[in-house]
Image 1 (cartoon, one colour):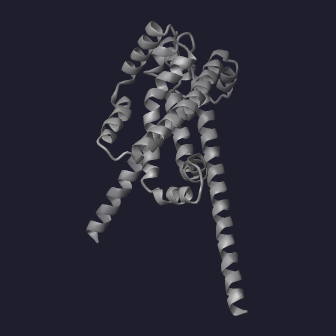
Image 2 (tube, one colour):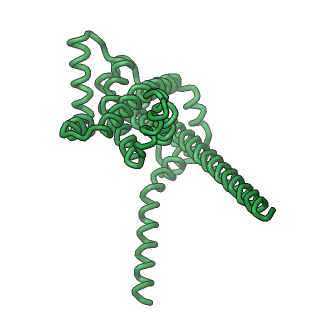
Image 3 (cartoon, one colour):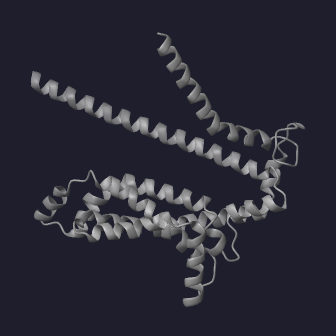
Length: 282
């Protein structure tokens, strides 16, 4: 009993430290948003205020940077997800030694520092193709390594895919495009949504690569980094609080929709069982 109590106490202590490590910075950041101090801090506490939300609303440069980050993230989704999907489908169907080589080539950007990717992208596109830094080049640079994340997600999903489904459809006269559109693509849809979400987050928070290829455009991370050097205010905290609130609302909405869908399916199964029972009794 003593050993069980010690083990339970250690597990409880670990969970407290773990969740404290995760959420304490967010709590402090949120509290600093409502402090009248012009610096993002909670000590000393100078009073409660909502003025930093007004400052955020009037900060046109920050909203422009936020919009630029959003546009770049959408471009990365449009480019990285199809590339990752194509690479995963190719590697899944290869059985030769070339599969290992291609896999290493596709994964290698994940092992390359973001600074190297940014500099090499800028040098190649600027010197050889005369394409200057900007949104387009930022999308290209970020997609070069974010596509690898998407590929890994698709490959994990494809490990449970039954190829006999495609073979049966082809035997029944379906074309390869029809097989992909009606069998493979619906099966990969959860992975596609996950890859798009991860690509959006990876692009939105990227700094090391973006700083070299952004040109005259400023993303949110670059803007915040510049504000750190020139004087950061709690207006950035206010933006973070809004993002956290939207994330929590999105999570609640997703969970509510998931539970409703599960309840609908359970009700459909129950009705089917009742119908079978009534038919058997008749």
